[in-house]
Length: 337
Image (cartoon, rainbow, N blue to C red; front, side):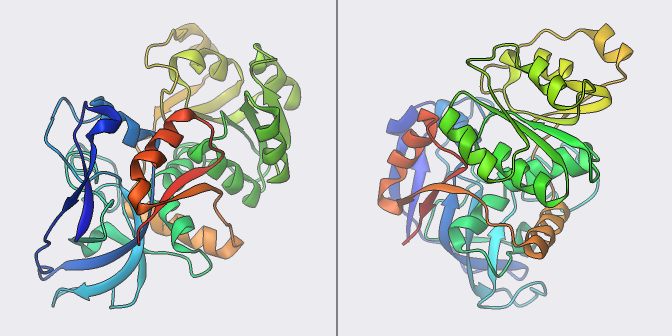
């Protein structure tokens, strides 16, 4: 069975094909034939050695895999052979409050992930995907989709008529845009590319801001929301954007910190947060229960995730390099043949 290993810290040279043999599924385990794997910014962190606490042990990368159930253990009750499924991000976070124990093992981090022709995992590490999605689309729910869901609706508690600010046009932000519009939210999105902003408007964005030509973009967010600011910010920038994201948030609103593509340090003004009764919350993907809620919502609204480009399995390194270039709009996916 073909798979990939990544060697943390070795960058793109550490992405190497390997041959593996999998054990038969245990009583509560499922064997899945993987058809597609979606990449995330986190996968770049793994190859750089920035994610897994300095552990240099090779690992099968990527959390986001979608495919078919081909074999089940004798005590599996949630799936049958032939079901179309996708992986969860965490092996053990099924529901409820996130804890260190529940989020210890993330697929493709410290334990083997999905970039392989087949995987064997617990039945509680999978969920059924909406029928209207193909495998490349279905794979994008696992990390980016549920991160956006958690940010906007779980921690952000957004309701129809609220406003949301989405930074950039990567996977989480475009997922957030699509979910926001389906839920009746007012969506503001930023990018350095007018072409990408035009595509965002085609997806329903109510206001678009080029942060290169408008460096004080938070002021445009305020103007777009009648001076009040947004209820929720899906904050992916980190050091370069957090201060302005807080300025663009209305009193009592929430900044959901998802990532730090511009760096992890930042200046926070506690008085601004107190005076504005603003909330800052960290988002570490989501649980199986959230993924199942997301899948139902996606099925109900017939949402089709935006897949920017699909690479063949043999070109996994090229997929990583393309993701690293920042050229994508939406998700980068690897088709597993």
